[in-house]
Image (cartoon, rainbow, N blue to C red):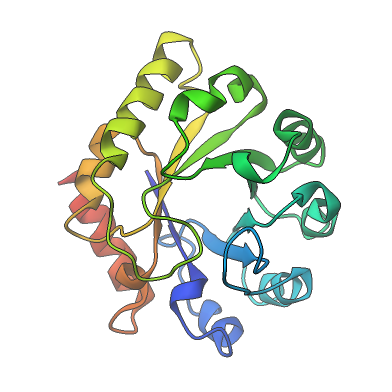
Length: 219
């Protein structure tokens, strides 16, 4: 399993300097939440910021587009060569088309679903996906507690992927309220990429915090 620390949980004014000290052998990805103030209430960063961050680290970027009509701006993020670009199922009428485009540009195409969206909603478009991001909190509000109902959603998704021969090609990612107390259950349910916010950045030593989360995940 891989851990993707969410930079929204740290000081964005120093993230470039800070990221230079993250160990790529420990920190697998950097999760970048792009919020537009419309799809979600908060407003965060854009492609210029992501480009600057990429110049300071060799850790692959995991770009999560929490924006309306991502088809209008996804190219500007793909130009930055991230490893993953995730769109929200609820944010566009063209999720399959967008995921095809993301794959064609060399990134892993992800589709995210909010807690109120049944996981079954994306079953028919999973052949276009490389990743499904199950939100375990409502998106756009940092610091929420993990919603335990997410575990059943992850399990249903994992069962469908396995039954249809997709578990080797589509990963399950989970984002929201993940910490040392919740990560093991999330991984046991089927998650293979876990987004960690405060749990990754508390104490100031990201490498040690991520290593501890991995230990708790597999213990």
